[in-house]
Image 1 (tube, rainbow, N blue to C red):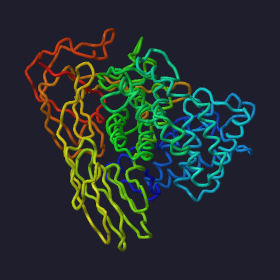
Image 2: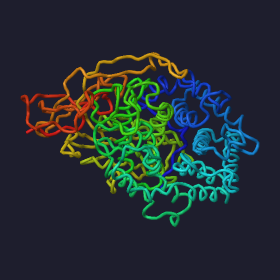
Image 3: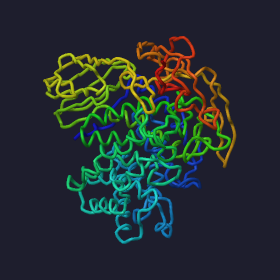
Image 4: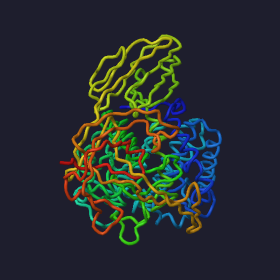
Length: 612
């Protein structure tokens, strides 16, 4: 349905460019300097991790480097790509293991590095060495699977569809039958998720690959990928992304558009966790499904996760992150005994270098850059679709005519935008702006409304500006157990809790934590036991500061009438709120409180009752 523009034609601007620069100046842009699993990885000849962490990191570091046009980052990314290709075996095998180890190798890392090489080639189409290396790698995998040397197991079995990204890329460049056969082999040996959905209804305190939240957030897109590569006859209704999405979200969905999973599915309690890896992978799945289907609901779901859950799990300066975030998160402390999380350890809620496990340290890096790569899409040669109203400059050609399209906006913090189009000579094309499902009305100067799009189909020449205005009203939405959450546009709002920070600097297993990438425990300093009085909310706009999702100077807020309630801790804990207050009766007179974007909070209460 949709195709991406050449990613080298993108230039993020405004707050989005600032967010990417913060990421480059923070953990993402420095992992190869400070973190042994990247710095000393076996992928480049070292003695540390030689499995998923370098490919995970490159999956975000590559687009980050190129979108920022940062020569230093680009050179460092190339060092890793060259290092991987330098060590590729003569027969094409690409992962750092011996020939004898192949039969027991979990090829998840193989599938992942194939995806990374395809991404590298997308930014570097002239790099024939990388393209050839990718084709040789996938051919080697095909030969080894065909003769039975390699069989999918463990992570590779449950993430088999990730290989379809590189297979599809290669097939589009040069169609060969063995690529289709490889895709079919992967599917035949991969997990059948249609047989697993009943396990997602009532999560248990058991770690399984079948309920692992990252597997499942990756999985949602598999039907769309299979259909695009193998054809409509290769899928059934059970494979449909919407079917899989419903099976997950009906029983595990959160107020911020994600699913709980700490580490495996957790249900709908607002104090269970959501792993950061799952947010990054969910966003990527949404991007791929939207491109494959053109169904706007996937773009809506992407924005909800991107503007709320993603920034909430990462500090504003992007030097630290959580492994697990909670919708109602009144503290981020070590659990001395049994953690609230179903299948994660007691440090998973801390902000730090690698709380929980290091997978999220490497993998969260893909989320913002890949979102930036999917802001504008094309359905044909004469169609430009503004999928997300984010600040971006696109410089491209349409029918051989140089065209620039710039979106100037503070969305999602504001609901207006100016789109500037410049064509060097007369050229006809359609400019289409997606109307989000939350918008009560939508207008664009000179455009007509066609279904869920504002469309200007005309001849363009010279410079033209058009104004986009979306409208919404802040409101409360119902959540499980009689709770409510505040929304306005694509943003969810929460009551922030003032935090006291305890810095933890130490070394464990040869990995040093020191400022600014040390760990932090957060304890609450302000009252959190509140409920909504009525449902009236008022919007407050502010200038903000250099951190788009910073807590100290939010760009938009909601005023809410609230009152104290008798709200205790979860039984057995002194740092986890109970699901509900003991009573909905007010313990104080109503007072005006300020709610800020969920994504800007560190400690917060998001789901609250209506006070009687």
